[in-house]
Image (cartoon, rainbow over all chains, first blue to last red):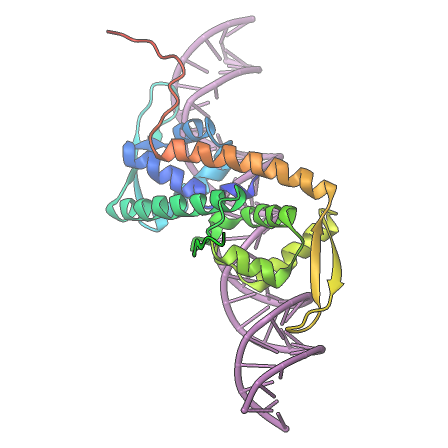
Length: 113
Length: 113
DNA sequence: TATAGTACCTTGCATTATACAGTACCTTGT
DNA sequence: ACAAGGTACTGTATAATGCAAGGTACTATA
């Protein structure tokens, strides 16, 4: 899968997931991997950054299947950012789709027949 | 505009444009900027790379409005790559849209009523 | 008990595309 | 001669991801 396409989108995906419910890293890798292939080494640094930027907070919780899990919870700032990112993404992806699928924006639809 | 989203997509856009008609760099900046804000300093290195990878070839042509223009023409390899990229993009963007707009893929639609 | 396997987190280095600013050349109009 | 705009190019910085490796906790099994 094209690495470059993912740039910036992973952050969006993580925030969207966390806006639905608290998650731990490993869980998000699983969830997101259904759509976009990623690995742990990618998501943890991202989570660290989001935490540093106050988009999320984290708390530990014990697990029955292994070591304690570090859950992440989205903050108000994070929700805000998520909203912006979703809007940007929608606009961006629509623009690209228009561009590559030939729906060229002819502003000024003058018939010359 | 979110810089990260553009990663990889610009290459796609350039190849798509060139698959329609030969263009020169400055022209493509204009064209693409209608949708995605970019500048010359971004596109020329990209074109250079595409040329190095044999996706495009270039030729000079005089202009009446300024210095000669360097036109780029897509090659068979380039067309191939464009096709792949378009497919990848379509799949990728659809996946992301599903993910962020909650259409979660419930494989196994068992009714429990 | 030792070992392997899996769930889970972390870090470091390499890769790669874009941003921005600056340079330079050509042409036309004043 | 100068300004302005069209056209091409380059260098340095930024930033997100990939991959590989390592570490801890728990569970199962030999």
